[in-house]
Length: 235
Image (cartoon, rainbow, N blue to C red; front, top):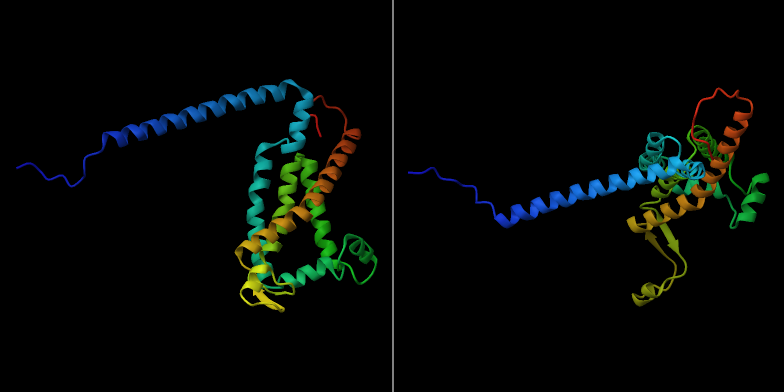
């Protein structure tokens, strides 16, 4: 009596499909490797392209990758801290104050209607962080990503906040809601607001820090003796 085999026999078509998927993946990896090799050759051949590439993604790939990957980590940490301590409304009022436009916000810097000293310290810290990172590594994209992380986290702390709606939408009117009402901020609105804040504040702060870092790096070259070392000329 032959031993019983509980495992069902493998389908030949399933094995064939799996082998085709593995082969396709290998071809994809090989194609990407060839494209990367060609791109690297072009970048290293033309100094102008090399400067643009270094100014966009940074001179050190590992440092740039760490900066980009740190953005979701800092966003989660900052969002959780604000949500469990001060709350979104406190941070919003500290940063914006009573201003309703950019001109009022700028004018409020010299009055009590603008951002508080704590908010200015936080904004200055982000600018300093972007400047230091850009001075050491350059790279506009990782610099902006590094700054956008904590700002995105501030937007995440808005989750679950009850907010007032003074102008009901057509959908609200359809269900009979025609006066002021309160709603709890959900996940979709939280992510949308967080992304909006990160773009609104992160891009200009990142660009400012990148410009200051580039300027500081070029000034540093003027006072640094030429030791003959080769490096990425750069933005």
